[in-house]
Image: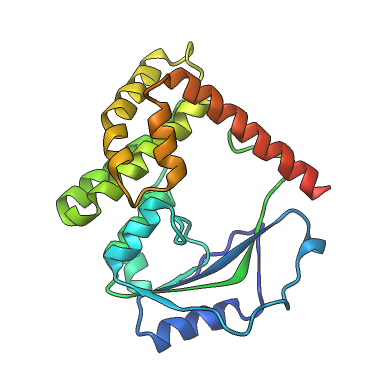
Length: 246
């Protein structure tokens, strides 16, 4: 089974390539690379290298990379997955961030995962919409799912425990950036407590991204400042995306 967002575009050989990766490597999940675009005129789907490196991971290794946000994403897109894995691990209903809530289970159910960075999936970034333009309490689903994952790896894959803590820490930063403090004071203080409890482990984790460890260090100075920096950086990224698009 492959998943393609209705707004996105795939290369003509997208399914063929993923399926061939799956079969040739006797894998349960095959993954390819992704390109971001703002306008269809930017795409050059024929400009591909002849050779792309192929990486083979165990399900646990792929899960760890996903939790660290390295190469493998939590999106169901850019993947082809054996049907029996999808049927046994369905998307959670009536929740946001349902992708994160199911893809980790796919990796956990896999024996072998194959990855190629060949960019055959084209992700549309919309100029007129902003993922973090407003906050609703339903976005707290990200924290609940991240804590669910942490409990899961603690029980089933203790070798991924540090990666699970890293994912929860990043989720807390994402919600911290957007949450209105005076409207949700209890949730804000809950986030602060979680960040304080996790930051030491993140700093000591050599597998964690350097940027994540720096943010963990900054939290010792002032968590409120960390919130404002996150907000400013998010707006700056959005601004430069608009400039690039035009």
